[in-house]
Amino acid sequence: MQRRILIVDDHDDLKTALTDVFTKLGYLVKSTESRDEAVKMDDAEDFDLVITDLDGDSAFQIGSSCEDDLSCLPHCEPDDKSRSIVRAFKVCATHFRRDNFSENELKHLFETVLNYKSEFIDKTDSMTNIREKIEFEFPSAISLMHSVLGYLTKRVEKVGIVDAESSNLFVALDEAFVNAIKHGNKFDANKIVKISAEVSPVEARFTIEDEGDGFDVAEIPDPTKPENLFKTSGRGVLFIHNIMDEVTYNERGNRLTMVKRKKSKD
Image 1 (spheres, one colour):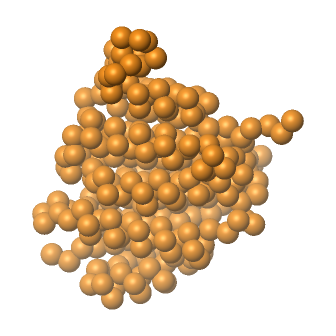
Image 2 (cartoon, one colour; image 1 turned 90 degrees about the horizontal axis):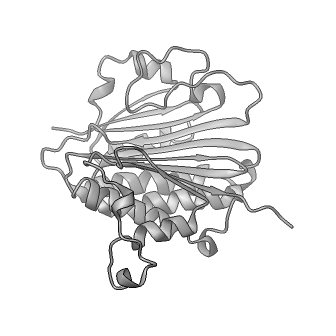
């Protein structure tokens, strides 16, 4: 069965170009200009891939009800006239059909979207005074790591929060990404990984969530103690804590939130 792609784009930044690319590759592509139009579609939950790129009030449908939210669309948020400019970019493969599942196909779809957006849409001079929400939802696929995390670190660097290389930000995100797929979902392609980043001029807040059973972080051996120096378990958690300014887990232990703040200039 032909895979289906939905593109929700209010400024036609991605819509025309990606529609052309994916149609030529044999995908059935539909598009809308707003979140409201997507919600009203009878088959909105039947797309293998949903790409959302919205700016300003249209990003979260300010003042609208969230009762009919579709899982692959950005969530509504309350009105706040004092907040910075808002952008919502999301690539969602929650409903990517698992019959004849191909991790390489999914990887190619994500890379195509992110490469095009990085090259033609994301501009350094437009990143001042902005609040951006970036989200990815996809079946457990380790091969997506470099394209997804590479995109996130570049966005944080463009905002000016950190120098991506010297900060080791990619290392922390990589550790959390691998843990979610390997230890959380155990490489099960029927389980979903959710990655989100809220980027502003002052900080970047990352959340990585899997569908595994979770764990108690307090039970991980402290790798700094002499008796644990040659144990591999716990080192990833230590790396994350050393690199990030704030690290928290939910009670279940399957959702990790990490915050990297912009360093003040002395």
